[in-house]
Image (tube, rainbow, N blue to C red; front, side, top):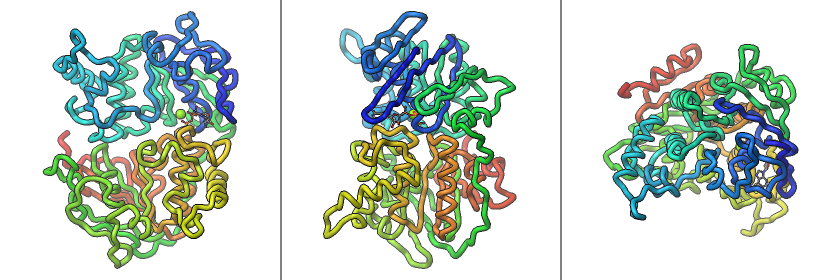
Length: 503
Ligand SMILES: Nc1ncnc2c1ncn2[C@@H]1O[C@H](COP(=O)(O)OP(=O)(O)OP(=O)(O)O)[C@@H](O)[C@H]1O
Ligand SMILES: [Mg+2]
């Protein structure tokens, strides 16, 4: 790519960017949230067609003028976007071949569709039937479906925009092995990731971007360190990944869930959450660890307004008092907040402004006699834009146009503004750059220091170990263990997380 410049109203997303990727290599791109990584890849893959940007895209030395995704796909380029783009109400197989349906004389051939989908699922290691609806599998598995979909096209250059953000360690490893395997077959990959250890492990080269420009391109070899990449990204040294632990006052039990059981929304024989009891004290940060499908998100969502599955039994307490969280508004009114892991579908209205998104659950606070006061709303938005360092031209900007990491900050701001006593954070740092992660950890610590009860669900064990006072492990819907203090090690957690599973 030569001299690529891309301007949005009020934002110069890319300024004269040059990028050279060697055929048959794995080329990583790193940079802070909003640096322009996704935009650059959208130019490359024809999402922004020729004429929408300045500069040239060259493939094997020839200039490409893609009119759209279709024409870049014909040239062998496939992109898997940061935010998944599957159709929830179609099956896995239908999604894999969407737009490239297998047919005979114009009639869908379902047998072939299912057989070939199954082969692709095997290749990406997804143990689900091709006929399963995409809505019924988690974000992590949906990511694997996206990859299967890319493989179904004859891909030469595979662009992966934060593919492992939603995956746990073993699934990430599996996926990265897959990319390495593809390299063995001559497929080139461009990998955008905030997980620098992955970059170090699989990439041949790394390009670092900052503020719409390429800062440097480095070979990934023994001389390269994660800290070196971080320095390029943020322009300074960042010595600690987690804020220092202050001794916090941990109080009485502030929030408890007892004997919580929830059934799968369709398969009514399956207990997705099975008799779970847990508690959080005020000032305490409690983690929930678990593999994909362990029921962590299902637990949180069903507690928060019963937004998942079929409720069977269980009670929610604040202190000694039972509270109702039967609906989302009741949960909010009772001081419970849940920041979802799926910001695009559940966390944000992508057509709404930053300010309106942040005030949405707390409209009363910015209204006078039932009418929203736009000035107050903008003021609140502005406050969070500054304190959370949301990168956007103004608080009137539509959240759908923010970079992934900045969208996440809006979701967090929204729940912070409800001033909850209990805050459940589901993968709060997914897709967040190292600098902003630190900011979010600091915010979590501050909340706890102010006596809030915080629950953190995360697939990144180092994050849980670095932040939490106590960690529960969940496996197949059951609580399988609890670790604190010196017991809290990756090994111990993993053992509990695997408990009762087949392998
Ligand atoms: N469609 C759009 N309209 C307006 N501004 C946009 C649009 N898409 C991206 N931007 C802006 O361009 C800049 C670069 O965004 P981009 O999504 O490329 O960042 P990124 O490096 O991928 O960040 P992240 O790590 O958070 O995903 C940001 O300031 C973003 O707000
Ligand atoms: Mg991005």
